[in-house]
Length: 416
Image: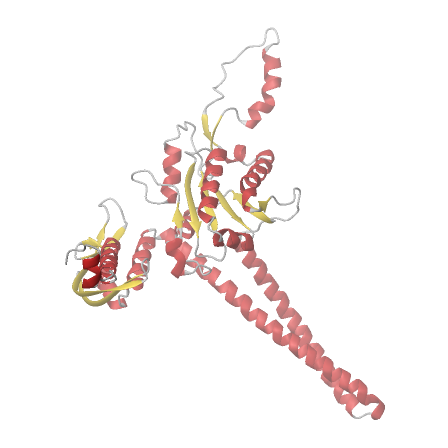
């Protein structure tokens, strides 16, 4: 039996980078762009809400929270749900992935409240299928500190001559991640989630285990530190290699009884050279693993400073996937209408469609929104692809209809 993966954390600082990662406005290095269209959003945003970040603010504004929210207060919890890679592959192969997703959404809504779950996205473009969920920690009832002091306060109020004060309501709606992320709650979450996933052959991890989840940035920092250690090891091995060669030269001039030692030292030298070669290869691999993460950080910073670039990057990627040249994409972003002749590719249908002097143009989805759409002859290109695909299916089915010979038609009463 494999293990469930349930990781809950309180994000620090601006959460827009997480939104860009989850909604794929920026494609991470470990994601396959050819499979991104398989990703799925399970929670429908309210009217006027375009993305996950707006959905978080919308829930807070409409929850009835009366207390002022500080700038550094945690507004949403990030939850990642999956299982061991081989078990998730097995669940997908036997056609149970949709059922697994539905059970995850049901557990989230039962555990944190249906209205508090503002986003849940299945990622299929990475190595292991997993769900990123976003929960706004809206709670009601007494605060933990009040519950701890309640007994003492009651005793003080009952003392004769003690002045009594009107208490604030204890059932007010609050935004409080700490009340959700208690030790008891975290253990309960792991237990109930494992029970929900038991029918898929997934079980709970070991209680009290000292193993801890580390974030992606921390993982790459540790890889970088290992890289530095490996460099030191290589320098040490180089010195050892030189010492070995010096000893070999000394042994070479000795008598026959020293020849066996020389051969042993030669073998040792070759072994060390092999180790050095492997270490160099590993260092290069570590560099390749670390560089994409640095680039991702730079992109996230750029998107935080210029939020509208996310939408432009998405449209540019769509134009590129369709098969448009860079110069054509530049004309579209200038606001020009561009006529194209040739073939346009739909990754959703894995099919190319021919066009003759088709008019392509970019337009805003709404006046008050930054979201852009690519149109062809005045129609959204995604809807145009669907229409062309349906026409192609109808044409194909027509030419595949069975023919009836005249003799067979007469014998079966078919009118010719």
